[in-house]
Length: 391
Ligand code: FDA
Image (cartoon, rainbow, N blue to C red; front, top):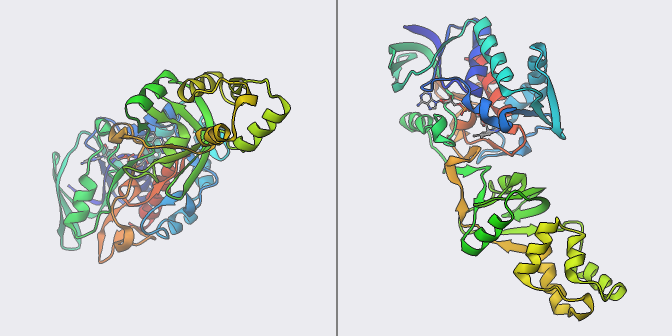
């Protein structure tokens, strides 16, 4: 079998690249070892896929080579993808500023990509494994469960390591290393935190409760909801900061980001000395959280009986809570992989390996990782289109 382009991975980036190359007149085959295309599209955004963020800029991405993503993101913008889904009549909603989700189901979005692939003449082979990728003169040769396939170019779009049960593998990294590319350290990101013994029990007692906080770690800072879970802490604030966190680090959590707790409590002590600290807390925090804080730290006394040292301690608990997670939930639940194939040996315009244009890498397999909020799909679309136009 001979094709102009073989794409390995029928995920967001691979399908986008394939349909773009197909429309450009290329004979394209997409292979995937999974039994279904686009599984992560289907499971993303709670089944409604946060498919882009209208405010995407290169600053929303982590990479050792931060300039790499600029060109593709500039050429294929969120408006372009919105135009594509609207052309297919897919309705969408803006759940948070800039974050677009399908109004119905993520399946509609996957159907757009599969329909476009069909119109563009792309062949899709699922349940197909690839055992070897080798250079063959000006082209490439693949050994697959379909037999030997010859290709003018191979595009590796096998994604990252998160959710192995969905078909994630390190195959793309292996191919990169085989051809002499570096792979930066990979780490589970956009992932909930786990806690140790007494904090775990405390979080579990509040499981399901969400509260807006400011969380900081290693220079990162997010103001978003935090969710207590049976295993620890989750919610957008925690998923976002996990991209900055390293094992052993403490998080700094501000439970009352608009209030200077010491000053506010000192004023309340002057003005309403009989009032209890627990009442003051209950007016500013969700009731269950306020009750739990009093259980954890004591202090149901009237404010008049609270010394400055007590107010300072409460300012610490509320505005500057230092918490060391035990770890993260890891690849099992992580949304993305931080790190990946070092982009310094790739063209940011065509995604080809320098000196080996018949081999390209796109999407999450690269060391380009977005924040939470639709940025990772925008990267998949933009890198897929840039590569598909050039290959
Ligand atoms: P993707 O992982 O989509 O596709 C890779 C494909 O390669 C898969 O089909 C896989 O089966 C195949 N493959 C892997 N190894 C192979 C091998 N050895 N041989 C053959 N095929 C192989 N992002 C976002 O922007 N908004 C959101 O709402 C969410 N939500 C979300 C929820 C959850 C639960 C997860 C896990 C992830 C998200 N994401 C997200 C992240 C987003 O899903 C992710 O960044 C993109 O899917 C990456 O697209 P790729 O095409 O690069 O990889």
